[in-house]
Image (cartoon, rainbow, N blue to C red; front, side, top):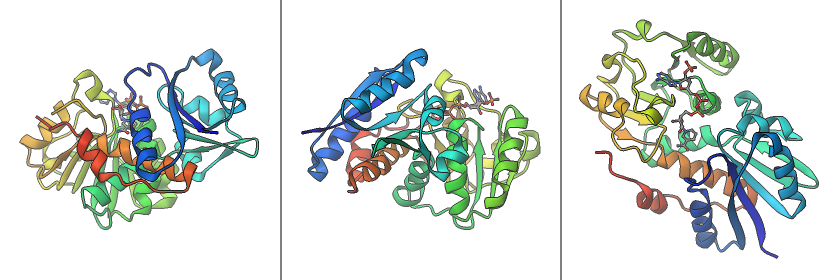
Length: 273
Ligand code: NDP
């Protein structure tokens, strides 16, 4: 029998996950069917349980259900616990296991695909929402010289810096405190670009940056990427590589086989103009 997988979110019409996992299945010769489900907050738990009862093996979870999925899981990885959110579920021996691959997907895209190791680098993360939280543990484990979190609501960045302090050199700073500072990698993990807005950050942070990375994808040159380009960042990237790499991590977790990602990222990349 063909194994069943799905992504659940709301809205879900825009999702690229069925396309990505369908391609992975073809590349690795795996027999599976991957669909998209529109979830609703009041019936989310029943929908997920029903999917697994009907033979589903795994799910991706996207906005706005990452916290609800975290709460309903029977087992949570350390990454998921620290992020407080999950983007992948696996049903095994009657139990729901939860993971968060967003951060490792982002790290893999920067280190492996873009070719920029975090070891010894000065890294600035803008934002303190779910995506930022999921990235901090993998980032710190990759050995940066410093990891600074800057968020519009400073208290949230301070909370994260405190929570992750035991894992490496992390600090929270306001946009004002960043004046005159330089970073090697600057990551926009805010959702500002989804509304065409610019998160507040001094232009100098980009002057010596090897990379400015925008988590949103398919939006072309966002205000953040434009500011980075004009301020001297050597390379720009959006989140399409992260999207494919987090999917690859989930695929390995579910199927035990790693799909090749470079060809698909190339195919899905829209030029940043
Ligand atoms: P959340 O809603 O959890 O967090 C949003 C964050 O953005 C908060 O820190 C918020 O600050 C900040 N923010 C929102 N608007 C502005 C603004 N105008 N100026 C400054 N800061 C702002 O979102 P997520 O963490 O889930 O998602 C963040 C981004 O990452 C989105 O663009 C999303 O599409 C992208 N993403 C990409 C993925 C991929 O695979 N490529 C995967 C997951 C997410 P405050 O705390 O002050 O409200």
